[in-house]
Image 1: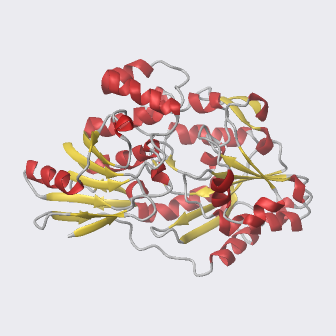
Image 2: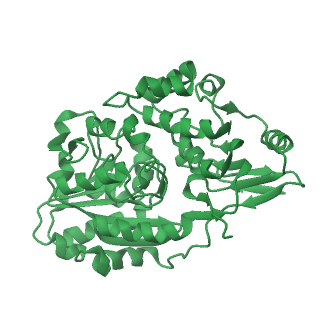
Image 3: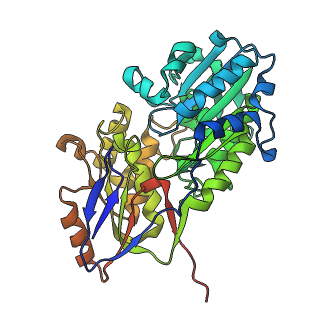
Length: 432
């Protein structure tokens, strides 16, 4: 038997032993919008009642400027479907074309430039007609200081191009997120458009170690709560949210007030991304969701954490991730070096009392959640020098690794999650 996992651009076929008891974990079939462009235009013209907003044309009437925030290259957001209709609607409402900015919400990730920026935007017309720029979290002058959040006292500094725009629109993909519960909506603003000081505060050990900072959970999630406070502090915003299926087809799109429209999108994707299973497994095989998410090892951690709730303590978690761009940032490599030098507990102790997290060290902290649950095995294209910094077991032969894991367990039960972190399995309690 073979199963196909998302890996790079083309996927990878993984052979499984004939005697393996395989549980394939995937979303139920999702609806596909027959005419995605028409669906986008309808969303912009007639938001649903629960979105709490008028159509974009009415919202933008009389506005002198607009800023559209988009996710960076790490997420397969269908920007090519909605940016031009959105911009054309703004212009038709009277917003000067030269006062419309598309702002890439990089957070603390690197900028997207050249051919990569063209791929991200997906429509040459957009690049020719409006300003397209990258957010820079380290540039003090680019940000406005808004004070501190009322409950946790996070310092709030947000990109002034977004804050000062008459019309503020966040766009993105709503999917499970291993810290913030779900991506999209408010997350595009913070951390997407936030200053490094803001990001490093609500990504410190205190936030990351909170049990509520988990996949598919918004209830008392400290990151989510801070993000909502930040939205209030900038004076609110609107959002265009998308949901895609496992083939990257548009399944849902909406537009409206940022919090209400995001909640609608969460309610939609929540029906599909959370998949119940009857028990934990000694062997779990997963992916980092393929291109573009698996370009770096940094993003691969999401796939590890997404699967741990169904892994038996001490079990084997086998993950495939191309990592075509290596580990990630130099800061992340430094955090991983500390992890491999000190071990999980030593690393956690070293960051426990830091008010500002070291850049990208939060991903290393999240990795420890997976490695404390079981043994993580990685199949990738990383060079040997980079493999040494992963802190996990390196796999050259997938088939042999799977067979060894099954042979070592008392049963032949194995779970396979082809789509990686886009599907979050959980053990459903059995009714007596």
